[in-house]
Image 1 (tube, rainbow, N blue to C red):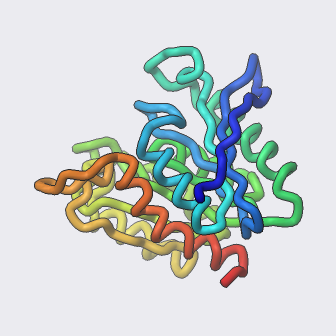
Image 2 (image 1 turned 180 degrees about the vertical axis):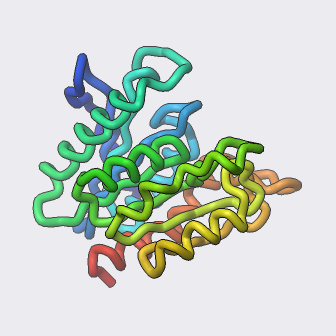
Length: 224
C-alpha cells in the first residue's frame, strides 16, 4: 500500500509556496526534490519518482518555486530560487530528526540545489534527474564550476540524448569530481528521459528512475 501524501505550504521570502510530503514509516532518509523550469511539483514525472522513492523507504518533500505557485512561466531570479530551496531544505531537516536529508531535482531544480550545497547548504548528498550542463547547442557555456566545491556524494541520472548535457562533456566534468560523482546513463533518453520509439507515461518514467536513486540514497544514509 502506497504511503499517503500530505500537502501544505511553507513560508519563503515574500510569501509561501506549496509542498507535498511523503513520509513512509521507518524511512532511512529524506530527499528534497525541486521541479524543472517548465513544470511544477505535481508533474507526473516527479509524482511517479517521489511515490516510488517512498515505496523504497525514502521520504520526500517536493515543492514549487514561487513563479509556479503564482501561475507564471518565467523562472524567478536566482536569488529567489535559492532562498526557496533553503526554506524547503530547512523544513525537511526540522522534520527529519536524525535522518540524513539529501537534495536534488529535475534540471533547473537540481542545478539550484547544487549551487546551494556548494555554498554551504548541508545536504548529505545530491540526486540529479537530468543535470543541465549547458544550454542546448551551446556547449561552451558549461554550468559546472561550482560542482568542484561540493564534497558530498552526487548521483547523475542522465539521458544519453539529452541536449542539455553532451555525453563526452559530462563524462569529462564528472571525471574531475572523482569518486564523489556517480553517473547512471539512461540509454537513448532525452531531457525528459523519453526514449525514441518507446511509449511510456511520464509517471512510469519517473518511477523507473527511483530504482537507481533509492539505492544511492540508502547508501548515503548507511542503510541496507
